Image (cartoon, rainbow, N blue to C red):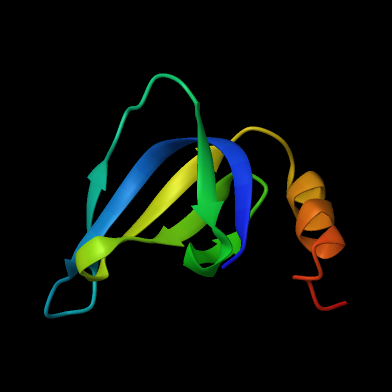
Length: 84
């Protein structure tokens, strides 16, 4: 299993979906970033501001991260995890 170390904070939890397919969300107001070693398999997508990661019980979370999309892409690319 491969890991990436990033400074992140939880921004939004998605607990599931309503019958009409709307996300059931919880906004999280974490104040500070923390260093986490994240299993790359948990990462669903990366934007300039957020990582979308899978969690327990079928939930997903949006984490804000320090840095840029370009820097995360480069780190994943160096590890052979990005298809060009």
